[in-house]
Image (cartoon, rainbow, N blue to C red; front, side, top):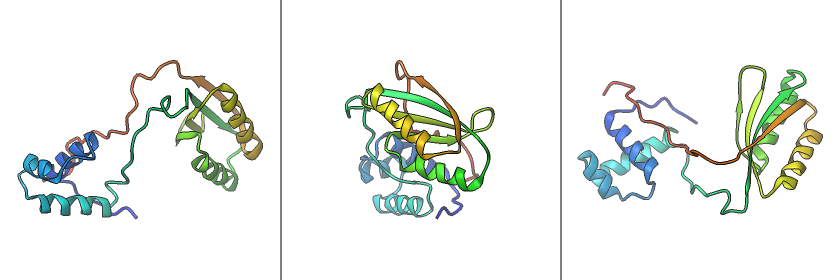
Length: 162
């Protein structure tokens, strides 16, 4: 459950530092913001409890993990039937090949980032996706040639007043 959190400048500095290195020591963070390590730890616990920090994970290089193909996929739906669309969304969330998925505006209904070991694996994924989701009218694939930037970093811009 996400609770509305008010972020002050100290929270923003901590969040920026944690995004850059989630393994940073509390003492280093405390020194950076001028608080005790225990005060920093309490702030981080609050940021987790309020949902500002949604999770912590290791970021892998897809190629090093055996997924040499990255594809940007645009899905166009046949019709807007909420039960079928909700089923598709659950399917996309559960599909291991789907790294990211967004519902979008415009001619496309969803945009996905899909990784696979090879094009044959990607083709099996698309057949399964189409067979198991009758709401999909068509899809377009763009195979990524190279990765210029891949980040989950959220800029900590000035926001709520301190």
